[in-house]
Amino acid sequence: MRIVLATNNANKVQELKTMLKECSSVSGVSCISDTGLAFVPQETGGTFEANAMQKAVETAEFLAKNGYDKAMIVADDSGLEIDALGGEPGVDSALYMGRETPYTIRNARIIELLADVPDEKRTARFVCVIACIMPCGEKHMFRGKIEGIIAREQRGENGFGYDPIFLVPEYGKVMAELSGEEKNAISHRGRALGQMVEMLDAQDTPLDTFDYELAKRADNDTATETIAFDEIIDDLGIGCDELQG
Ligand code: ITT
Image (cartoon, rainbow, N blue to C red; front, side, top):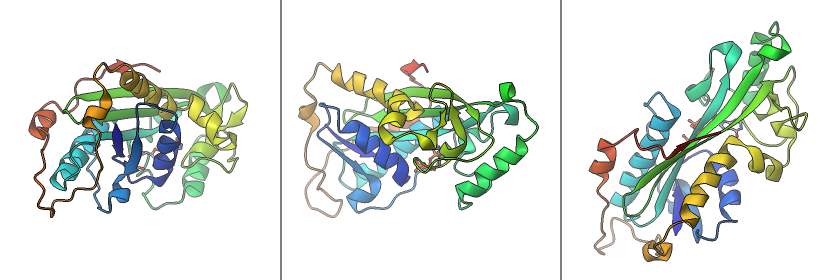
């Protein structure tokens, strides 16, 4: 089974590719930019589930039109929910204070906003929903989360985004102080992806049935099959397999 990651976030790509290396059901992982094509799916759903499935469906539809119709498409919608901010930034985590605003500035601002919030009310969680569309059109969603505390200062050099302010209580360290391996073992993304890998490993049909080179392009004269994406779009936002932390 080959996978195309429906994300333009290089940090997510790196984490997902690293974790999928261990999966025996997966023969190769690419991201949108690896195909030589450029595509930015919309995220207008308002929930992690709706956005993840929207990204998967739109990317699958775009790639199928360009000849990439036999890979499994995997999208990730994720973010940080801070209880003292009423769940913000939440689904808008990438856009919070402006997409181009450096995370050092965003994280400093969050620390400032929470300056008077006592330790016991600084609770937060990272959430990740992975939506995938199999080459046969079947779709699945998996949710992972990790609970933590918003730190009073930024620390650590690893990870990305809000990792420098997300304290993981059992480690006594912020996420950005954990190694990649440590983060992937406990993170929202690692937990959601772990459920997807379990689903792949449990498939009865040999997955290689659908496995072939991602080399065809729309301008090739080779005929390509396309998946019934209209059906998938009709079902957008439903069909969550598991909703567990
Ligand atoms: P794609 O839509 O192309 O996947 P994106 O960055 O726009 O990329 P999201 O809409 O899912 O993706 O926003 C996710 C944001 O949540 C991300 O940009 C970070 O700000 C934050 N985030 C998600 N996972 C994180 C993690 O593991 N560590 C730190 N911040 C994270």
